[in-house]
Amino acid sequence: MASAKQIIAQRAAGELKDGQIINLGIGLPTMIANYVPAGVDVVFQTENGGIGVGPAPAPGCEDRDRANAGNQPISLIAGGSYFDSATSFAMIRGGHVDATFLGTLQVDEEGNIANWIVPGGMLAGMGGAMDLVTGSKIVHIVTEHCARDGSTKLMKQCTFPLTGAKEADVIITERAVLRRFPDKGWVLEEVAVGYTLDDIANCTHLAYTVADDVKLNAFGGDSGDASRSVLGL
Image (cartoon, rainbow, N blue to C red; front, top):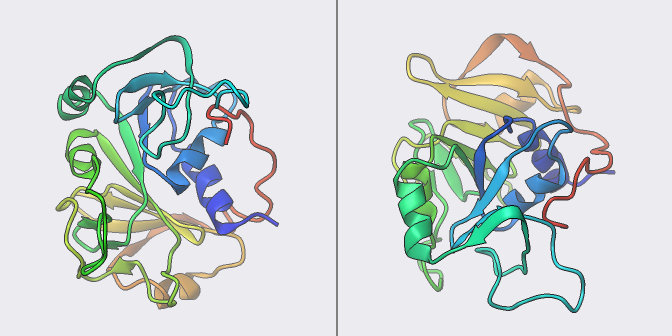
């Protein structure tokens, strides 16, 4: 039985397009690299200074100076390179990243994203998410639909400090896929196996419309084998 995170990662990988430069946030987003569709070639960038991220090094071959933003050891594919974070963020801020996939604590009706801190919590730093949501051409939010206490993460309005305002383009959860359009707002495009339109309405507070061609039982269930383990995760 696939976990919620596996379901999300596999569906999110379906958003990848051939030739894109992709940034994957820490945690759940890194799992997306395990499900890159056959025939799709993308280049993975890590915000702390690397492009062309490849499989995880073999045990004993890790270099502690070569890691992704989540501090996991990495290697590079042919043609990849390491560089300083200033170069990496020049790439991000310059609009050279085609898409980013980030987790979140909250996302709301206007496309606002709150993913860097719970008020009152301890955190080493905000990371690069603020740059990624403003610099990437497409921002995908990949998250479980509800928090641990059962409350929805898809809110009418974020209550946590924002990472970015009106930056979310796509939301992918283990229950549904929603896409935001300038003229229509959020549109429910897909519902996962085991859920109904009513189920999604009951656990979603942000306003949305249902696509005329909404796909039911569109994804989920057994996630199957990863088609290609790029990061070795």
